[in-house]
Image (cartoon, rainbow, N blue to C red):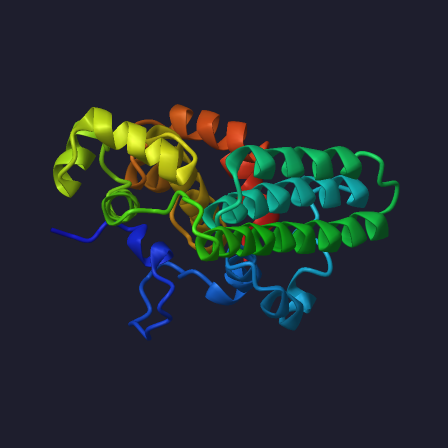
Length: 253
């Protein structure tokens, strides 16, 4: 069976592979987000040139509006990776909304660029602080919620089966848990429902594929299990505040 088209976009190993017909992901562009996810301030600062300004294709004469659209996209991605790094979902969502609100007050493109850098570093510090708190609680003997092996396996199963319907029963069977127990434990440990995690993974991979590949919207929607183009557009717009087509036009490399 042919490997689902999106799996190469989940592989961060950097192994050399034969160049396919479609353009592959540029992992270089994602380095700041991986450093953010790890709470790695030094890593973020070492690639500061990648985040100092929000850049992309000019879609209209209004450069400030373009910058603001790109800022919303980047902030949404930053919040997603922060949650992957251990930041609580509610806290990450609140911080994302705070910065988008602050963006509305920016009157120049330079102001948006400066706020973008501040936002990125703020998310990274929040992830770092979350990890430090967990370490302190562990050292003091306080009980902390950790990602168990079963839930980690469930996350991995989800990431490698985004093309399927991914029902609780199927995921639970794959990791040896009942559907109800899986749903409860997943929410307690991961901070989100299984359904929300599946959605976030699909949107994140779709955004990368729109930016870095030549796959059509129809191929991406079908390959990531959205069922239809209309469903793909609806979910993507709800999460990214922009349609897939607009996202590709503004970000395509």
